[in-house]
Image (cartoon, rainbow, N blue to C red; front, side):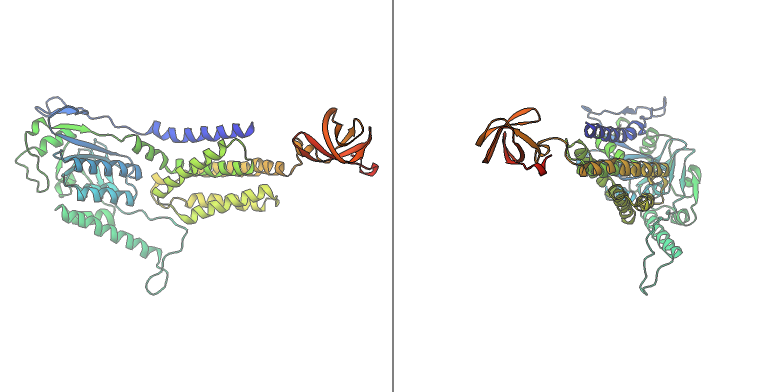
Length: 472
């Protein structure tokens, strides 16, 4: 029964962990067009059955990570394959994100045959850090008033690994490594600026000196192409024939173009849930301890199935995040030492060492300087305490139970004493525990003699005469 209860607890933790970010995932509502701002513009979120052209509007709201990358990349690919949209709009409000996810999005933008216009929106939004590179990659860059861009200096990755060596086989100093990262970032953003004919000098300052600009300053310095207060106004300005954008042209009756807002589907939301570092971390822990519980106390299988599913989901999420294998190794070492402490008590040596290794491994598990993708320290320490307690008490209890003598079943009957009910040789009857059993003996037995049970074959006991010195 306790195995079933623990298995249900594991499932409940898994469901709560996966559901909480979905419930709190910010969902930006489609902005409404102000009265008279666009003369004949029709705003639509469902263009099914309409023959008017539509411009898909994608939304980047929050840190740029694997889930946002999946959502943006898949939509841009699908829109290009359909090849019906005159353009693609992307609204941006981000504090930054992972370099790998940013480059995936930018590669898709740069290879898009359909022009893409990016708008930092709504007022108060920002295109910071990775958002700056993203805005430079778009065919047309726009900002709403009271928005900002810049601070694109790469955040140094905190890693316990030694610094790599150069051509002379000497370690490269940390400052030199940071310079290499910054120089690579400068070259990347300058190449985007040169491609889109925008201010490359300021782009370099945004990386090297974390420079920032307001919308009006960005327009003045040729960092962006125009200022627009909403996607509707952006469409209106891009439809103006007096504005000449080399990489962006709207054809046809632009007044009838629809805006088709496309929000993350269930797949993107699921990826967002499991790639939350805290959720991926919990999935990993549920997986490890679910499998350990199944190994130590095999039974109904709920803990094992839940553990295997959680572990696979956790590993899938971690491979999408900047995983540090040293941190993962320390976590595995810590769990192993804590388990050894549960099986072979060592006055706390293994337990303390395992807990410390587990905490250090958890801290270094996600290898990035982006705070949005770091595991909560509170979660790490609370999980360490729970893990140590679970391993030392629960797994220790289960391990000690494995070593106890069996107190039920056929093994309890073996080598016990029975009494012969009537004389027999071959097949007869004996009394065992107040019950009459069929018995077989190759030697002649007398009524009242004591015999020991040697073996059980079906419902027949194989017995042997017991001497007085063997009484049990």
